[in-house]
Image (cartoon, rainbow, N blue to C red; front, side):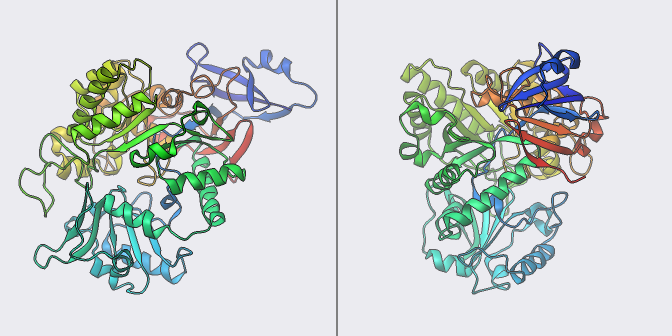
Amino acid sequence: MKTLYYNGKIITVNDAQPQAEALLVEDGKILAVGAQNTVSVLKDDATELVDLQGKTMLPGFIDGHGHIGNLIVALPKLYPPPAGIVDSKETLFREMKKMIANGELLENGWFAALGYDNAFFENEEHPTRKELDEISTEIPILLLHVSGHVGVVNSKALELAGWTADTPNPEGAVIQRDPVTGELNGILEEKAIHIIGFGYTMKGLSAESLSEMFLHTQQYYASNGITTAQEGGTTQEVLQMLDYCRSHDKLILDIVAYPIQEYVAELIPNDSESQKYQNHLKIGGAKVVADGSPQAKTAWLTQPYYKKPSYAEEGYSGYPIYTDEQMEQFCKTAMEHNWQMLVHCNGDAMGDQFIRAYQKATENSGNQKDLRPVMIHAQTVREDQLDAMKELGITPSYFHDHVYYWGDYHLDSVLGPERGRRISPLKSSVVRNMRFTVHNDMPVTPPNPVFNIHNAVNRKTRTGREIGTEYAIDVMEAIRAVTIYGAYQYFDEAIKGSLEVGKLADMVILDKNPLEVPKEEIKDIRVLETIKEGKTIYKAES
């Protein structure tokens, strides 16, 4: 059956035909796109006619980086404004108590929630084990920081994990302790919070329960116009859940999974078929989380943090998770297996390590294939690093919404006014003719490509301060960053990312045209409908 979309503004993201009046779909693919009188002659009596009524159609949005398969995404949210209301510890604890009273517990009895941001709290203090114990000492509690790199647990959670004051820090992680007594304060950094989260909090949930949680998450993504999403840190448990959903036809989006470095040998098959979509799922390559988060002040910088954390010594600049030798081996292994690499690099010192390692691995492996490695986040990337990345073929995927969510914090506390203003320098990529993507790193911030476009064009903090507006880009380039450049990042440019004949009918319909509204109003554009391979997977209530 055919479907004809007409009487709208169609932004194709195809430079050879930038805009069109009508688009015809058949069997999940685009059959024709162009002038209405040209396209409409291809319809037949059975063709479904969809009058866009002047609305705007774009290619389906492509998630540059996120963790859709991390079931923490489906947990209750405790975000600060504007995504939520938690702007103080008092509000945090009040909302937690409500959620627990309403029975918002996991099947296994844990209470887990995500999204708190200590930057909003008095003295920027994280909640502690003792404060969570005041809520409950019987229910194990895990709170995940908005960055995903820090979290807090109560005494019951530590008891179930068997962690005491004598428990050593896991490699590349910190179990924080009271500086006077040495007792655990409940705050966990990096791998420590992941061990608790995946090893205990999410254990014991049924496959059906997990798949329903994941379907809900996909629907949330679809409501924001996303048709291709990333699982950018896949573990054994997550891949099992994705396989279950695939085999039970519960994948409504295309999912690209990247097994985390520790699991790649067992999770990435040697056959090339796994790197092709099979019922909406494919393995994209390998993921390395190499440093922390700037707003959590665990990212690895070449210069000290503007204001050091209270527990750190003078000159503190964060830390890497792996040595140079380990990173070089990761890169070499990826090249030997023809795997694409995604490397989480928030700090510029971490960027230096990745670039050094990839350069050495390229020389040592002799692999000349276009593997399209990606520097994930690239928030503090320098101009000289972008030159090196272009030479090596490394694509930046920017966590650009930091300019809005934490721009004030970066300017005043994390990086200072000089380094803070050039965070996520999109324009620096444009002038070098580099492809790049932008992302939300869900669950750190909500998956919202329209807001990505808005921030890329406006570069203002949540309080309205301009932050490095010389690094802003135009609307069309921002659209490319969430469509065709995303397709390129996934080796999918032949099948998606633009509205062209033969490509998948992945589309999003917006109530307004981002190329026509005042740039300050882009954020208010609504997603009306999301279409995956010709089928509507989300439609807004009228």
